[in-house]
Image (cartoon, rainbow, N blue to C red; front, side, top):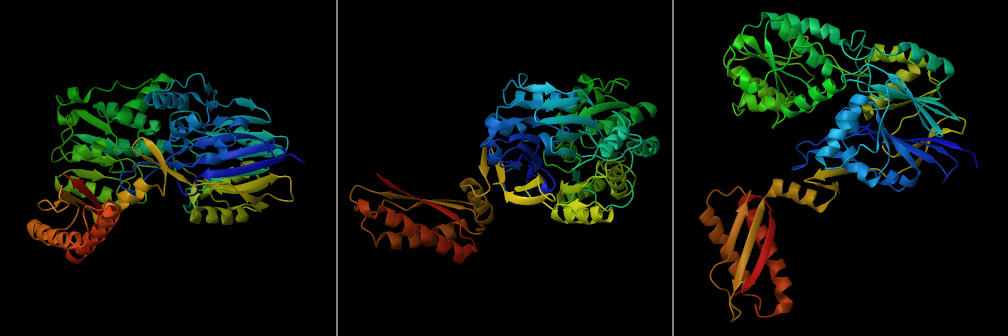
Length: 552
């Protein structure tokens, strides 16, 4: 049988977040596999109690004996955030450039796992041999240090997996996009390009960090009181910009938030952020006059536990805001976060602070390619086939249309679980399906989306909880009134609700023989139904109901 070259996304296709992609080469049942990226997404209010969601890795776990390793393009959470959850099921080598490797090691330290024997640090613009794959890391530009595209060479042809990228003519920190090498790769021939689709609807170019710096410099120069800047901690170029602006305006700078400190330390460890002023401790910053300090903090998306929210609510122990201060949201308002962010903005404005965001000033540029950036990449690479990833369905379909405009010969629209045969065949196509899905991190346990705890919590959040304890004496009759506890029910008069429910339970219990052990389950089930029915009549809610029979 002929060797095959396969591509299969398990996450990140049909959604933005939790990117996880598989590549395979070899004869059927003898194929060797690699994983490219292994990310998370963040849960919303529809899944109470859940913060992180990641792709179900079951398909590749079953093939772990043929897995050559995990190759990481860059250190954003939607590309590395699931690694500490999934890796223990795989026990394979991990390949990453220095900055990404430092953050990976920290992730595993939190899990009390020494990952250093498995981490292989790959230098920028170097090549990795994982036979039958030869993987070249190509420096791109993005909103984090060391973003890499991957040229995946195989006997059947070459693939370019872009990861996340943009064309930034002045990225400020880290290398420029390696246009020369990308052109050479295009000249050698590219069988398929797996490409970022996030900003495909956005015209023009995505903009430069250098331009943001000029704008922030102008803004911060005119502000006279305390300045709080909140941004994505992972954007080290933006972090360096705030340090630069602080120095130029004669201010000290203080970092606030665990992620901000973690990224700062990782960048310093890898040789970045050398020529900047030293940050001061927030406790020390409290002693400075308002016009002499800039705080750079986490929480730019209005996260409830983020530093910015705590500052706005006056619950942060070290950072105080006052009327006349300014808060700069130097980040994108991510779709879905508008409601909580506008609430935060309103709260700050009511306190007399000036709020500056992408809505009223130029304070942010995206890390993803707009249409003009995409055109440049297409001109350099000239792929035979384009497979859009890293987007919702609407992004990916538009990306297919864009590729056709750019006269790319073949396009393949995929969703999570699709197995694309890139070779052999007349053209690349989806020819099979792999099991795919999502796992929810529930406390410290990973469960699927239909797991009992998830369903119960959704039910609890909608309908509340009722607990009924019935005491039965030695003669087999009811001892005193039932003990009732309820949570989350819209009860205006507790005593009235309880009295009515006790009567209904009493009437029901009298129809059963309490000495008959065989009838115990029937009693419990019947009381549960009666309680739900009563609650529905009185409150409009059918709570999760637990019934206990206790013999005394």
